Amino acid sequence: MIAAGGVFALTAYIFAQIAIVRVLERSGVSLGQISLGLAVFHGFLAFLLISRMGRRDPRAGKPFEGTLEEWDHTLKWIQKFF
Image 1 (spheres, rainbow, N blue to C red):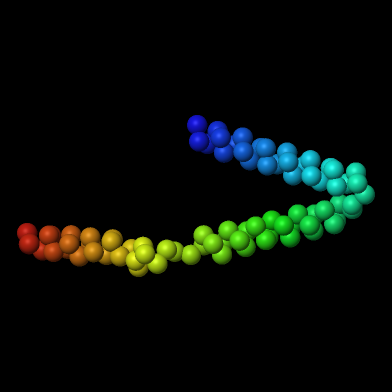
Image 2: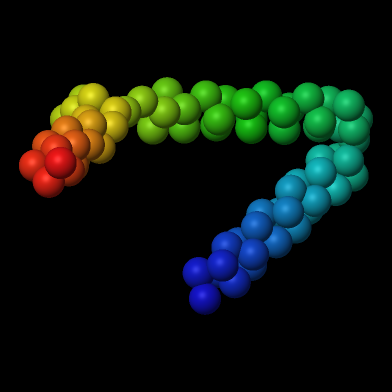
């Protein structure tokens, strides 16, 4: 169900982009200017997303810290038997 919702949301987004381009074309804006404007707008949105969500939360600790601890425990457990 979530995948279907994602597909519908993506389809709605694509149709909205087409509608924006058509409205701007009819108002006299050239296709090159529209493309440049949309590229700048999407680039700005990508920058905002990356700057806000692209970093690891410092409260999460070092990457793979839990895995390394589990590895140490596993090795000790195995060495007990041999």
